[in-house]
Length: 206
Image (cartoon, rainbow, N blue to C red; front, side):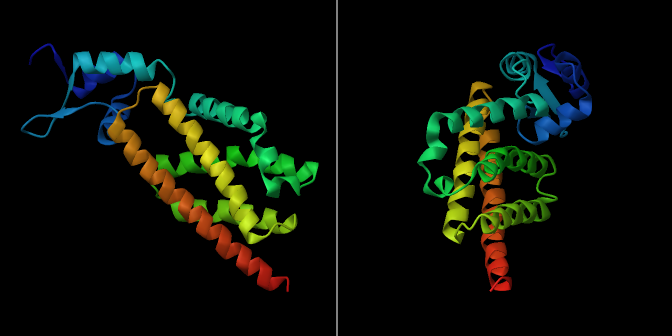
């Protein structure tokens, strides 16, 4: 075999990860991969080296490192006074405001769980997050429109931060497109759960 081409095992050795990780990344379109006529994975040495320098070393694929970077970006956006401009936010007391500010982390963790399992637990995860937003909104006398606006504020801020982190890590465009399709599918399910739960809670408390 030409020295410019690497087997899965050799690519894993070059990247310093387990072969199963390379297999997962290549199947998800994260890592550039080629197939032989027999269907075997082959990796071009120059492509893997460039990818490692721009993506792996940035720490963008490490869940905890990525989580911290995204949350840091979310906090920066929030600290710029964007929340204060939201009418629904002005109606909340200090305790409620703190709870909403912390909700970005639980939303991101739920999203990461959804992406890591290819949506395997998506329905229950989305329902739980939607229920959390709906019950909190009811607890603090927000309308269903205000509850939706609160969720959309954090969803959009989170998506902006994820885009920034992944773009700076030079992730492949094809992989990012698939990821954002999944993000929107997951957060749409959360919004539907929020509205359905809010309606149920409203009817119970009448």
